[in-house]
Image (tube, rainbow, N blue to C red):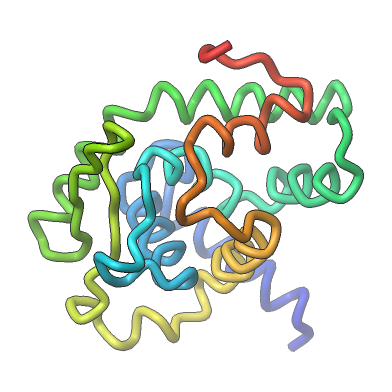
Length: 184
């Protein structure tokens, strides 16, 4: 079977298994994949400011949205009007989902899947994956290969993602592409 057909079949399977917009499980899986792929697996290697995940996860799980990010990063220019609308919608949904995501992270912490610590300096919470509590099969699943690939590419686009401030990430994802956001 060709690689493209295989990828299409996996994407169809995910659409049947998850409601990508507001599915706790899908968001949790993507969070785990991002933390694992980028090596945020100990307190020393923690992701500072958990809220960045809320804005990044949609880019991991949606290839069309990720393509907007990748193409405009190379061009370092404002996105097209259609792309700006897509980015604006993504920002708004992510912003509205902040409380929802924090509840999910708290539940994942209670299950021992992630750890969260208060960052007094940034007045936020940092997060890392408790890799020892994940089943071994989780990392080898082909189902989330696209999300892993997108995670790696995000790391190459933003090499300092671990310590990057949320506001700087919002600049990179939205403001520089012509999207006005609530923090403005």
